[in-house]
Length: 577
Image 1 (cartoon, rainbow, N blue to C red):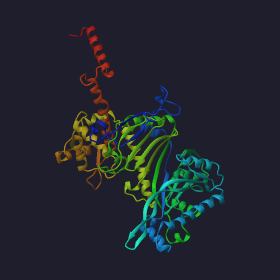
Image 2: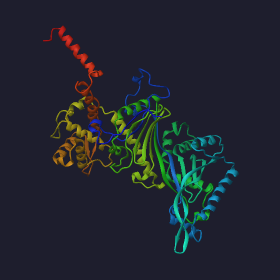
Image 3: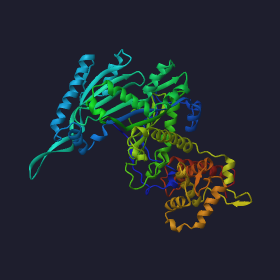
Image 4: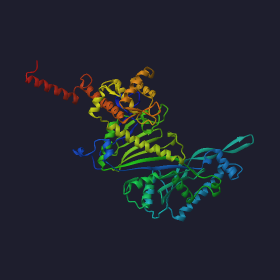
């Protein structure tokens, strides 16, 4: 299925002096072509040449929206053993709690579902192993003619957390004891069409405590709202391609709140068969919602497919050597240390023609891909809200939105700056000369100075730290890049480095703190220095030296040819001695 290579890069094997700034990537990079094939010869002159050019000049429409959300439906008091015992003994008045009391509840729940199927003539489908449930649901939705209602009920056997009765013994004899367990039980999927949210589904297990899932799509909500308001739009698979009122579309996306999602769940819990009675719900045994998975997407529709292919061609070409796990914090704004879980790697896989990029952090990731050849989709998927110190309850959605959308923008900012780190000739020349600012002499930053490269290689790692960096942070990074202990770097040197960086406006002090942040000029200069050295001078000089590279290399052979031509000309002109 795949034909590519995998590179596991650890921070101890590759220096930032060689790679420049990096972040953790999981690449799925396929042949850059597209539905209409490779780029034609000679067509590059009219195409965008850089990532920044694609993002600034070739995006015709963009939309930021919640995409898919997968929510847990659960009764909080029934998620542990003592809560279950309390439900049967003190709420329902039984002498003891056992699995025998759960069976009638399960049978009654299934009977009410079967009654709904017969009463409303709802198709009931048993999903087969390996069958895509979403495809089956789409077929039935296409035949559904009502504005709102249940258009399909699916049944599948899946593993679920349940409570069982375990026989235990004491001096009086055997007695039942409730324990937590797992089992393969039937689950019913209710595929519904809502007048406000469009298609979604609710899933329930048929065994106590009857936990469920709610799955909705923010883009389907957007389409439904645009239709209800009479705003014309062109649909894109799981998104929209264009809209006559972009501001209204973005306002709709921004208005998808936790309260509206909560109202959707309550509305359909009242309409669908329910495992708990009205008396149970009045006693407080009501379903609550928590976030199991949330996707936050930024869709940027490009003027033509070729622009998207140029974008991914540049990204793939520049980032194949990335993979340092300590840099994932640049995107997610979270610290990563040796105890941080997750697999950090750079991998290239060839599979079809659609390129995609994956940036992983713990249980979460960002996926970036070319959607249907028209849109650049950047999508943050958060699988565990606690990765970011946020609770799982639905009320935390505003905080989670901020994390997801900011991560998308950070990734694009890093790509834009890291791929377009050109500085003007005058600025480059100015770096090589000492300058005087406000009566103070500022030493030069010479390109060939290893100490300068070490300093500039360290700077980009702090670019996206929300709270900037301190003297100590820079000292530790310089020590790691220089192969020395932090204690060996004197305070005088650190003050010297910070002073010349600040006076050259590469960094600025955060007001009322002793912390700094890197400026746009500082980031661009640092990227330029480190990348030119790592990608041009080092490999080129290695190639040209006969003792370090085979003599038949094309670049070395070309220089030998030039040398011979110069020698021959000197002989003809009688200049040779």
